[in-house]
Image 1 (cartoon, helix red, strand yellow):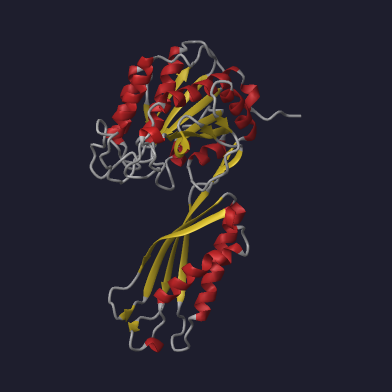
Image 2 (cartoon, rainbow, N blue to C red):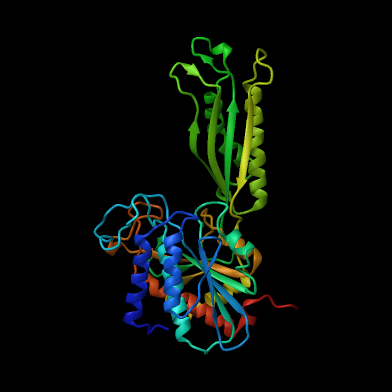
Length: 403
């Protein structure tokens, strides 16, 4: 596998650049879908649409066996890409949009694995399902629709990866068990009593209530959940229009993340408890029924949990082929709808480092200057191929033993 040709390297880099030029946002990946189907056809595979803008196909081995899925996400972001000394040849051709999270790399890596697997001919028994999934960046995500439309039917296990800008190029890192967080979006509307600033006693100030809530909530949560087990933040606070008038309503948008559904429930309860206290503190007998609040929480992607047995085997196999494989990375607060697949079938989600200071590849995911070290594309394709072949050859090593 390490003798992968220079021609293959050039091919997989070229595919990544093709995708990078045409970023499309979640659930609008029409040109991307068309290009994937064209490339699959060149490889001798018949891609079909799934989840509207996604693609799915299957590589068949020489006979019956287990089926493993390889998944790539497809969507870009609404980010204007900056011209750099690196991206001149392949900068986004869709103004205002960019592959700022590496999904272009993920697609080319899975297509690279497909090419390597097709070159194996009939040297394996079983099937490999390729899933190109739309809408990873936008909750509720495209994975749910892929599952609903039968994308996992007949699939026994699944593997995915993500390029990480904070890990050195070529390093492979993941962990068994909880690996990535659940994300939850909260919308809070605080309703007070508007009026002129010259008569504050005739007002209930929702801006003041919002400020008090934001300043207090972390400490309140920490009374019940250790700080290292959650993160919470606010992305928008909106209300009012006149400099000398207290508004009637303020809206707060934010999110919180945890590695455990019970912690999420505790945080939601803490948010309600804190809001209840603030309503009591700002109550005014002149205005019965005020202040009031509404709290809406959209539960996003679940905790991503790598199957322990599958992960241990994957680590052993990858360590036999690559110099830098780590299984002890700490869980982190990123969220991924790959978690939905792992709720259905066993598998593993891995991180592949792309940071390369010498090449100037140092920007974080979602930056307008984000880029990848293209040398990792071959490694990513080899990783997925090696696991897929080992799984189909020895599926018993990837499953829990019944005692």
